[in-house]
Length: 84
Image (cartoon, rainbow, N blue to C red; front, side):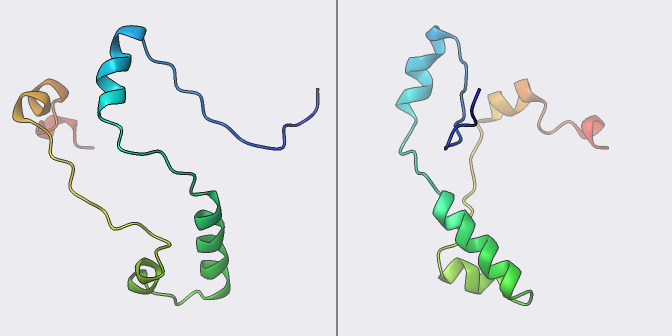
């Protein structure tokens, strides 16, 4: 069997969850070229700052993902016993 010329990700989810998950998707973006450019810049310039990388749009600005209190409770996100 020959190696494929591309990479892919396959995510399996139960059919009943598909509508719930798909409704929340805003966009899917291939960031392969951006990631390659990020690696190139970091390899060439060890002193490059995060600010510069963000200005060059090589690193996305992180946004806070709000989680409902009920879901936090279910996922035990506030449970200090889980800290290692």
